[in-house]
Length: 181
Image 1 (tube, rainbow, N blue to C red):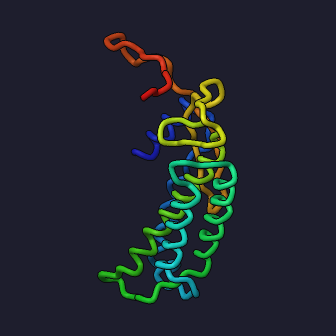
Image 2 (image 1 turned 120 degrees about the horizontal axis):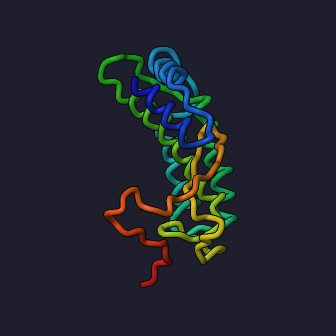
C-alpha cells in the first residue's frame, strides 16, 4: 500500500514522527460530512481569506525583517483562530461553492501558518527569502532544508541536511555558491 511505502521510506531516512494517514482521512471526512458543511459561526470564509491574504502580503513578503515576521506569526494565528467560528451558509451537497471555498481556506491557512513560522526561524537571506536584518546567507547554519509540521496554529520546525553529492557518477556535484548579479 502507498501509505505503508511512504512510512517505510521515512523510517529509513529520517528520525521524524510519521504522518498518520488514517487520522487525516477521518479529519477530511469530518470536514465535509459534519463539521465544515454545517458550520454556523460568525466569520465568513471570504473575510478570513482576505485577512490571511493581507497578513501574508504585508508581513511575509519578499523583503522581511524579524519584527514583520513576528507580527505575521501573531496575526496569522489570530486568523487561524477565526476558523473556530467559521460560517458556511449553503448546506447542499451539490455544487456547494461555499463549502469548497471553506475547505480550500482550511488548507491555505495551514500553509500560511507554516510558511510564516518557517520564514521567521530562518535567520538569513537566501534566494527569494530576503531578510533585511540578515543580508547574507549563512551556509554554516542554514545549508539545510526546513521541515515543518502544522498542528492547528502551532508549527513544529526541524531541519534536514542538504545532500552534498550526486546520486550517480555520471554528473558532477556543484558546490553551493552565493548568487551574484
